[in-house]
Length: 52
Image 1 (cartoon, rainbow, N blue to C red):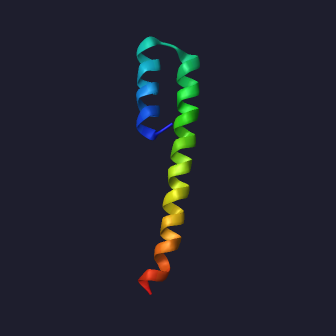
Image 2: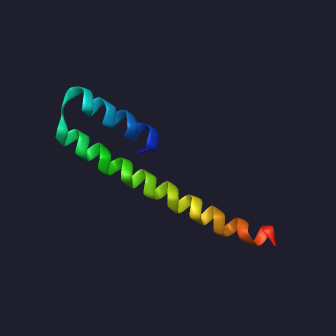
């Protein structure tokens, strides 16, 4: 799930008052953010040698 999709899922759950769906959406959003952070860290490590 993309970060944007997770955001929409959280917003939909909030509007419907469905707390179970909200919890699932928040969990998926956290996973998406962790994956994005990992990709950014990997990109950063690959870019470091090019800066020297």
